[in-house]
Length: 366
Image (cartoon, rainbow, N blue to C red):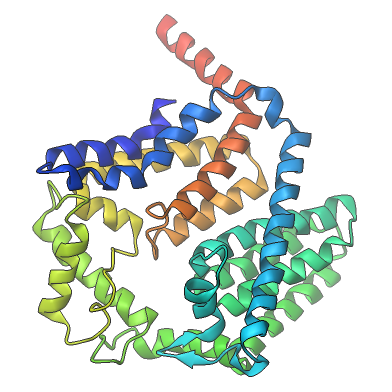
């Protein structure tokens, strides 16, 4: 169990190393779920994680996400007209900005919510395939449309690739129908990128802004991320062994922005690394990163043993998002990942941990 708490101890030990006053311990609270979930879930009776129970829990999650998605649209159209759906302001789509800043309930970063939508889309898609529940189509379409209008680029691509995988490997239909479905999905995706204003802008932005640093009021999510990565890389090189401490990370990155960029993007908001691996490196140094990578390897190892398609989706999606967001820094991200991972882990707890104990005993005998 202690292996699953490694990130908490990385943050805790680093904060103590850099301790000067009570404020230096604040980052510990952002990592508490790394400690609490293993402690709580390993003490819940295994009867609560049977296949039927898991299905029931995921059904609840599906309906909650469905209600939230519909509510988002109802709230948006209460305040705005249809033409505002993909309206841009400082390269931010209006609907995305509304969900992140204006909505009075369940305010969440779009990347985090679309990660949840990816899971529920996969869950409903498998229901259609394995149980022939055609009513699930309404859930799949709702989740896909919500993901599209929230315009989280990486998760949009991931969603399409997940659906392609499901069509190829999960659907038991003739190959010509699989090929037709994939072609239609591809045409639909290309069509949106080419003709739907908001989707088109988000992908064109990548090409146009990748090598153009932020300047004045000319900035977007792509060149801001490049600026953050360049500063994070510079800080990591200068503080490779000890890092700068979790409390100091934001201020050190901000100082780098001031020194290297003549832009407004950092003046109203303090940015972190937008890469959780880099966050670990610049905050706790190379040894903190290595311990964190060992934790990730442990997660992957148990995921492979559990061998569940939906868990593969969760883990792969979260690890990819960690490359562009501080996914585990925000409570939404860490809570979502931990809730699903430990639910799957507990469903196979006897099988997984008995094998570990047997292997350990055999090794000791040798």
